[in-house]
Image (cartoon, rainbow, N blue to C red; front, side):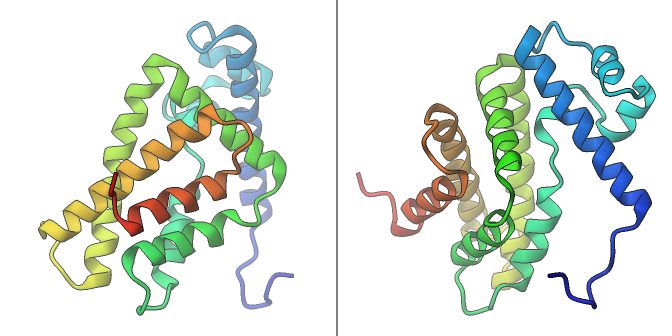
Length: 199
């Protein structure tokens, strides 16, 4: 049950969230049925009963329908709340777990489908690589602040690079293994990273 101190989501925001989810779900369905390249923004907008201009208010590009989910700000806030005695990687694991542990099954299905698209469609793989680099910058900022080092510190840069590399590998692994739970895959990947790579 939500705390009374937590801000309530306004009706307008709930409608925006519902519209966003509808557009994303319909887009993925069209990608699945007729292919990513053959699907246009106009088709997505029509089946979602919105105008193309409304589509672009929620998603700046067609490929962003696959990648944008709103989780990053929530994970960042969860990370900042973690006890200072946790190491950076422990804090990241706890933050990710906190965000994803209670998501409903239908949302998990949507995540899997988005990841599978991003890993299997050539033009989306390039976007995925760029997103990984953007995430590296975000992780660098968070870790530098947590450990009290500069953003250009070699430890911080190496850590953030290793982290996003582990996540990228996990996404590829997850997309190829239907029986793997998303949160389990993240935890396993981060455990490998934490223990060190000794092959």
